[in-house]
Length: 124
Picture 1 (cartoon, rainbow, N blue to C red):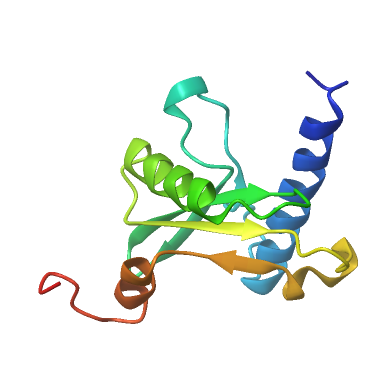
Picture 2 (cartoon, rainbow, N blue to C red; picture 1 turned 60 degrees about the vertical axis):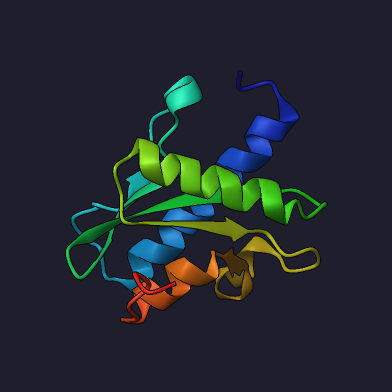
């Protein structure tokens, strides 16, 4: 519903994340894009990112209150729904405007972080 203020805030943030990442990766083909809604089987908000050939799903949050546990669980669930290797959360930091997208926050599990930087997490 486009009249829902919460959804509008989310859409604005998702679009800002996509635009920032397109610029950061010189994505002239516009492969980085907002994801389609899939209801309970949602597959994240931003698609088109990969690392070493494996897909990354990005969940975007534009809320005042941090809900870290819920957000990380959602990112992991949507990573699984999308059959992606990595799930991360990009969140709007209070007091940091959307003109400063590079200063927004990124959350992920320690396991995801270790795998992204080349660690072996099979021996947990």
